[in-house]
Length: 303
Image 1: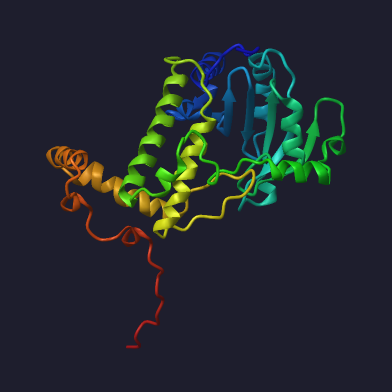
Image 2: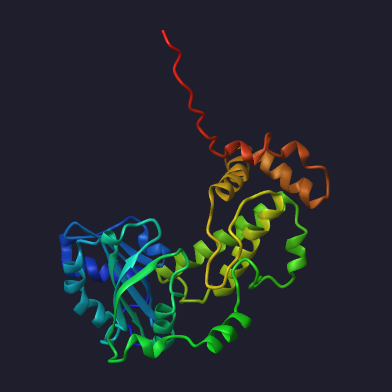
């Protein structure tokens, strides 16, 4: 697997803990989510890592010294390959002065990654890249996308929420009931989480979950059939959760995981298998009941 000296986030976290001791403190379970988050000399940082492929580290605006100190160690982790670039990442809703110093490595497709960064396709949440510096001796202008390249990319693009990924028959998903769609989303989300967990602990080898992620976001976008408000799918952007979607998911999750007893759950599953009426096991009310209500301001009565 590539040139990296460690192959998953769990191993990377262990390496950093051993090398830097008390100066390094990782957040609980962060390595299970495809990265390592925490603090170094009390400065926040976040690493996104995939063994044999890429590494990205960002720190708080006042944490540039963290990058400078970790740079040699992370370069060694990446098989002594130099970073492809550095920049300040201004996430959506963050002021320019709080942009996070960031360094990236990519040892599989560095040219493609640089092109994504230069042409504003590296992040899907409206983040801005400031003070971009390339480490390969080329100019940023060398990677600017031509109009023809942009047209070709859009024409052939896969779009989260539209592309069904690993789903073999999208029509089946399109016709699921609201409750059955919840169960499919819950199962796919659990599958992806379990795979990341097992990869992080070295239980299973690294696997590509791209098709499963497309499938999950396709199903999530299908919740709009039931009134859930989600942004329109766009090229290079993931379907991100909204308060509307979170209320919908929580409504069903709370009911089937916390309200139904084990006996009721088993009876519900049996009724489903036998094609019987399951209305007695459904949650009461409506998922919109969980949406935050706007606060109505009024003048206090005069005494």
